Structures are given as C-alpha cells and as structure tokens.
Length: 107
Image (cartoon, rainbow, N blue to C red; front, side):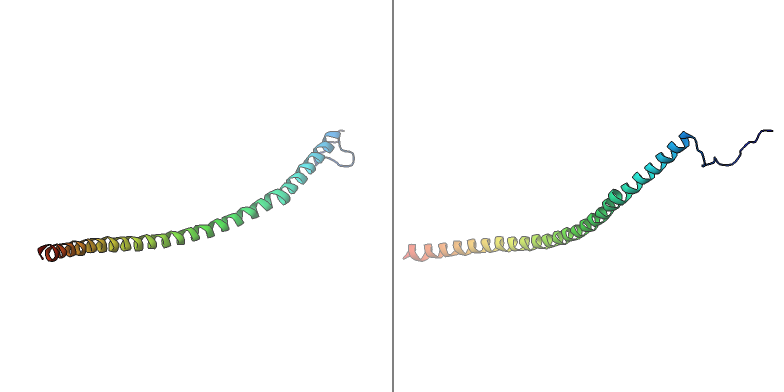
C-alpha cells in the first residue's frame, strides 16, 4: 500500500528548493525590517517635525499679514491726512500771497 503524506512537508530532509525558498523569505524579511527601522521610521519622524514647523510658520505668516494690513490702514490714514494738510498749506500760502499783494503793491 502507498503511504500518502497529506500534511506539511517534513523539515528533516527538505528538498533544495524548500531550503532556497526559506532563505529567500528570511532575507526578504530581514531587508524589510532594516528598511523600516533605518529608513521609514526616521523619515516619518522627520516628516512629522517638518509638518509641525510648517504649521508654526503658517501661524507666524498669518500674524505678520494681519500686522501689515494694520500698518497699511494706518499709512492710508496718514497719507490722507498729509494730503489734506498739503491742501490747507497751499490755501494759506495763496491767502498770504494775496494779502501781501494787496498791502505791499497798493502802498
């Protein structure tokens, strides 16, 4: 009668391809572990730190933008005031010139 082995292969005397497959699987597992520990984890940590830094920079830029907006509004008010003062000075200069013409030329 034939003895048919229906279970997993026996590792007492494996065939050469089973040994080769085992070495390949172990090597792939070791390479994957090295990549995870030495490459992926440090890159993930660095990406998280970069994200936090960019968030801080974004908040600082938003704050500076609000300050610049306030400065622009103040500069517009100052510019308007200077423009108005310039017109008043021109009016006073014109009045003084008319008064000088009247008093000095008519004497």
